[in-house]
Length: 257
Image (cartoon, rainbow, N blue to C red):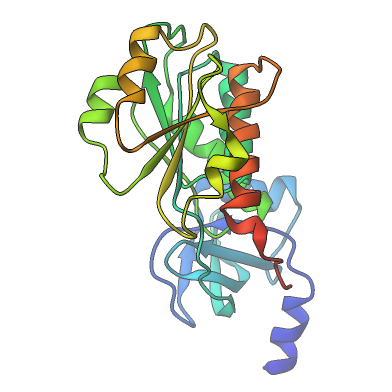
């Protein structure tokens, strides 16, 4: 059996995010989309090695099995990667048009954001938010990037309502184009390791003066600049997440395979 498990471990073809409790010897039923992907896109058959993961079970070696009538399941064999600490990092952004929003969600998920919060501001111009589609994009990004969790996609919320319920211990890094903020690298050096934080990027037209004034008076807010160039909203969001991960997040450690 050890040899069989070793053979499977060496030929894992794909990763699947599967919520729930994992136990050795139990089976996880695949949904229709997952089964179609494994069998008709990746051309995997019974006996193929697949990795299943979630934020409470870690990552497990599994074997694809037949259930009949086009149904498939994964047989859980053993854990191959334990749970790992991840940054508690939220991204607040104003909703964008569909293609740019999809791209933002995908890349923010790859960069390790733990929650994505669409925020309505005075200058927000956007399409309708489809949380199911965005969740599917986040799942695919988590599977590809080898993270163990999928970021939560929150419902859109007005800025004042989001701030009214804001956790007192979560630092809010406000990306400010007005020039009033400190360099982002300088601000992030002062954040304690593993402390909860959030990055907030405004709409294409920027925050209003009233919004910036109100946010600047809050004790949980640090206003930062992102350099001399004016960035599009999605570019600013990913730039800020990247700098955060490099200075205060999990880019400070090397992953050991």
